[in-house]
Amino acid sequence: MLYHSTSLSVFLHPELEPRTFEFPYQVGASLLLVVSAYFACVTIRRGSLLRYWWGRVARLLPSFLAAVVVSYFVLRAFPIEGWFFPLPEDLRANLLMLWHWKPQSYPFIDGSHWTVPLQLMGFTVAALLYRSWWGHGSRIVIVLWVAVLVPLAQWPIRIAEPIDETYRTVVDGVGMHRWHLFVAGVAIWMWSVKRLSTPHFSALLALCMAAQEVHNYTRTPEGLLADTGSSVGVAIGMCVIALVARSPDMAMPQPARRAISWFAGISYGTFLMHQAIGYIVLRRLQDVGADTITQTLAMLVTGTLLGWMLTRAVEQPTHKLLMMPFEQCGGAARTREAKAVGPR
Image (cartoon, rainbow, N blue to C red; front, side):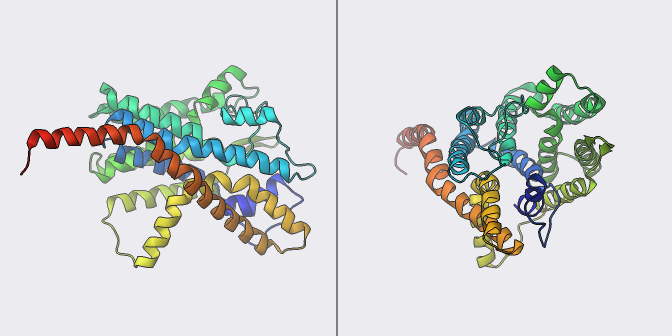
């Protein structure tokens, strides 16, 4: 949120005044994928594999679809001259998550949404791997190394000019240049439960960090441009996640624990809702003379409030509704087990 409100906002809309405080590092979404992969490992053993997969879909997809629709209508209701004005075909393309496949034809309504199809693909691959021979024992380690090394080996092709469009469509469509973030999350979990030695984990995590640095290179008219600051930020984030995962739970004052738990509970909704609508908030406040600190705070508050509303109105009730068949089956199974055992 800080990156979007203080840095990317001005880059995308140069008419916005430079922020008094700027956070120019792209770290949030990348670390979101690392954390998603870590918790996929934590939860995949709980209940049936179908329940695990459907639970992830039920958590991610309804909120995403609602966020796209809400953002679409807000952008149309409060248009700003010269800014992107979404059309019905843009709404359809965003609901179908077509941006990665052909970005020149399918613009984002909200740029933050790029992680959603990658998370859905990641959870699906995790379920398929866990069910297969390759998802267990030392074989999963081979899969992790291959998932980082193959995209790295193709990096010269990815930055070549001109790039073959069919190749780009496939590679970007499956998010190949982001696979290292999922690998990092899985590796952190394996290290936290001592299924990877520290030297092995360090080597694999270092490779993921290198892949992030390579990913952050962009081609400009002046040549390749690095974003090393963001790469270092993601690397530090990976280390922090790893240390927290491996360490015992920390004692924390109850008010702080409640505040962190509350924000964590609405974080996905906040992630989905803060960017596109937040930029409108920045521009409207600038037009009435508000200073940049007030603008930034307003975008943060608006994103948090909208995220809370999306969580309470969509994410939680739809997840509960979509998981009811599994809850009912589980309840029926427990009832049959209790009858078979009899009174104690």
